[in-house]
Structures are given as C-alpha cells and as structure tokens.
Amino acid sequence: MNYEEFRLPGSTARQRNVLTADAERGIFKYGTSSVNLLTLAASKGQTSTLDPTIATTLAAIRSSFSQGGLTPLGDNQQRFTWNSPASQVRKFTSVRLDFNLTSKHHLDNVWNYNVFSSSPDQLNSRDPVFPGLGIGIGGQYSDRFSNSTGFDVETESHERAAIRARRWRYGALLS
Image (tube, rainbow, N blue to C red):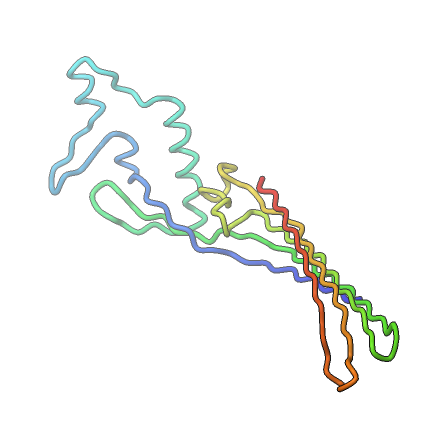
C-alpha cells in the first residue's frame, strides 16, 4: 500500500479592463475633449443618475484596486492586474496485491484511488472576478478510481502469456 498527499498553494495573475474613476462618474474623454454623459442626458430629459445597483457594484470593484495595480489603457479604461490565490490538495492511494497461485501462474491486482480538491478552481476560472468580492467563486472536487487485474502464465518454453483487465471511473463535482 502507498499513500501520497500533495498540498499545492498557488496563485494566478488575473487581469480585468475597468473604467477610469472619471468614466465611472459619467465623464468620458475623447482625445482632448471630455463630456459628462449624465449632464448631457439631463439636458435631453433622459435618466441622469447612475443606477444604484450599478453604482454599488462599481464602488465594490474600485475598492478591490488596493490589492493589485492599474495600468492606463486609453481615455476611459484601465487594466487592473492582481494575483488570485488558491490551494489544491491531491491524495493518491495505491494498493497492489500479488499472488503466486503456482510456480507458473501469477495473479496481481492494482487499485488506485485519487482525490483532487481545488478551491477556488483556477483551472476553470472559478476564482473571484475581483479580489475580495465573492462573485464567481467555485471549487473542483473529484474522486478518481482505477483497477487493473492481471493473470500471467509461464509456458513450458519459459515464455509468458498475460491477460489484463482494466477499469477506471472518474467523478467530478464543480461547485
């Protein structure tokens, strides 16, 4: 029997394009000009305030910027870059049984059971969309089984003939 366990901390660099602080307030720049779109909307009799849900979401996103860095992209956009931490646990269990039935007949069996757990799941981009916000977080948990059975026969001329049967099963849960 053999058991191995790996604990794998890690992080992945993530990037998101975001509005500048002025653009979030409705002030859009075009070259050397700027226009307050909310003021323009008010002058045309249109809705001239930010939707409260959108304003709250933009404020929450902006509050996460202290955990990374901003790079200008153009007049109204910036690129936000940060490291998204994660951890994985991988467990590997193996059992091998060998039987010498006779001097010319041998039976063996190998059974494997593997458990994979990662949270958040960066492989499938289920880590936070922005640091500190609980949006889009998920994990991956899987059990993987395999079994191999063999029967070996040694002939009179000392040649070996073998019969092998293998079976495996994989089950994953994404949350």
